[in-house]
Amino acid sequence: MILQFGTGNFLRGFFDWMLQESADAGHDCGPVIMTTGTAHGNIARFSSKRWLVAERGVEERVSSVQVVSDCLQGAGDWQELKTVACDPDLSLIVSNTTEMGVQYIAEELTDACPESFPARLTALLHARYLAKLSGPVILPFELLEDNACVLKNIVQKHAIQWYADEHFIDWLASSCQWYNTLVDRIVSGFPGQHDVLGQQDANCVVCEPYHLLVIEGPPSLQDILPRTDGLILTDDLAPYRLRKVRCLNGVHTATAGLAIQSQVETVIAATQHPCIYEHIRTCLFDEIIPGLPGDFAENCAYGESVLNRFANPSLQHKWADIFCNSISKWCVRVLPSIRAAQANGREVPRGLARSLATLIQLYREQHPAVNDVQTLDQSQSLKEILENETVWGQPLGDDLIEAVLKL
Image (tube, rainbow, N blue to C red; front, side, top):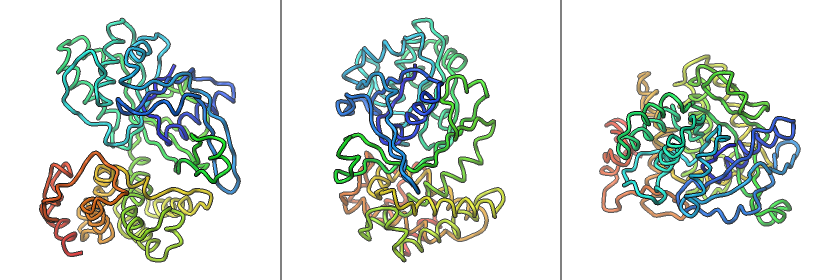
C-alpha cells in the first residue's frame, strides 16, 4: 500500500503513471491512497479514482491510470487517514506538495487534522508508532535539495514539540526510511476543453514521454518501487539534481515572469519568440551551465536536450502554471546559479537578475498570474523588498541587489 500526499498534475502524470506501467507489466506495487497536499484541498473531482495520461512527443500514447483505490481529504477524512497509517501493508509514503509545502509551521496538537503537510505526516507516523508497526519508506518528490533530510528534520521538530517521547523520536530515525529523490518530467497538465481527451476526461494529464526518478537509496528499494525504465537507484544524487534543477527548472523559473509580461502563454510559444528564446539561451548557456560542476561539454549537451524538450510541439505548458509559488521556486532554482557565478569571480548574471526584477514587479502589481501563499509588502520600496531576508530566506547580497536596481 502507498500513501500519496498530493493530487496535482505532476504526481498523477509521473509516479502514478509509473505505478500503472509497472502493474501492467506484472509488478503491482499495491493500491494507492491519495490525499490532498493541503488539509482542505478539493478531493471530490477525483471520485472516479482514474484518469487518462497522454504522453505527447513525435507520437501520442494514451494510458489509463487506475492504481488509486481511495481519495481522502486531509481534514474531512482525518480518521480514515489515521486508519491507513496504521495498516500493516503500508510500505511507502510519497509526496509532492511543492517547495512551499515542506516547511515548519508551528501549530498546536489537537485531535483535528494539522494544517501543514509535515505536521500531518508527523501525526500519522505517531499513530503508526503507537500501533507498534515498523516505519515506512518515505520519498518526498518536492524539488528541494536533500528533500528527505529536510522533511525528516521538520517532522522530528514537530515530534519533539508535541509528544516529548524519546522512543518515538528514535523510531522516526531508525524505523522510518527517508530517501532523497529527484524527479524529472514535464507535465503540462490538462489539455483543455477543446482537446478531444479533455472532453473525455476532466482530470486528464498531458506530459512528455521523457521521465526520470532518481533515488538516493539501496537496491533493496526496488522491491516496493515500480519496475519501469527511468528509475535510478544511486548512492549520490547530487550530480543528477544539480544539473536538472538549475538547467530545466531554473530556466523555467527565470523565464516565466518575462513570458507572462510579454503575453506569451506557453513554453513552446516562447521558443518561437525571438526575444524570449534569446533570454532562455543566454540564461542556460551563458549564465547557468558555466557554474555547473562536471564536464562542460556534457552539461551543454544536456542543455540542448532541455531546449528540445521545451520545443515539443505537442505540449502546451503554460507559464502561468510554472509561475505558481515563484518566490520559493526562485530561491531554490535560480539563486544558486547566481551564487555559483559570483563564486567563480563573474558578475551577477544579467538575465537571472532580470528574472528576479520581473518576479517582484508582477507580485507588486498583483498580476493575475501570481498564485502564491507568500506575498510582498506593497508599502516597501524595491530596495526594501530585496533587503527583506524574511522573504528570500537569506540575504541576497549587495551585488545582486545593486544589479536588480540598475535594471
